[in-house]
Length: 98
Figure 1 (cartoon, one colour):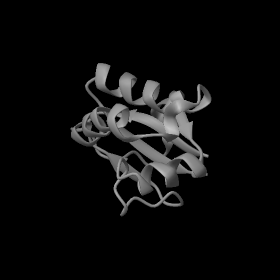
Figure 2 (cartoon, helix red, strand yellow; figure 1 turned 90 degrees about the vertical axis):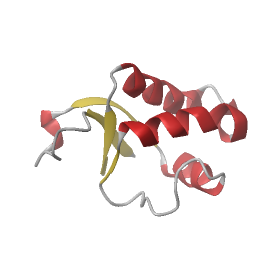
Figure 3 (tube, one colour; figure 1 turned 120 degrees about the horizontal axis):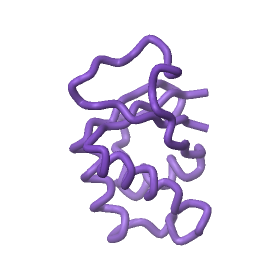
Figure 4 (cartoon, one colour; figure 1 turned 30 degrees about the vertical axis):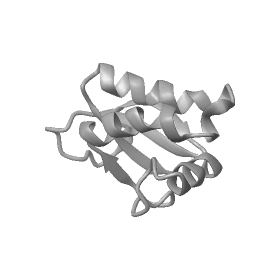
């Protein structure tokens, strides 16, 4: 599971994720499927920590309804909810690999 945390674009990456607001996670299968569909850029690695700025989060949220067959499952709509929370908070996301 790749854990996702809210992180304002203006803040540096913290040393530990416990300092951040955890808002959910994404499983590898969905992550890879979204990469194959062009929603998640190919240079993001599921097994490494990375950051999505608020612009990237907004872009992914706009692409999802148009492109993703992966999000037809109710379980997988969690990812949309995570992106929506980040957009509502005007924040980016920090991803920490387990």
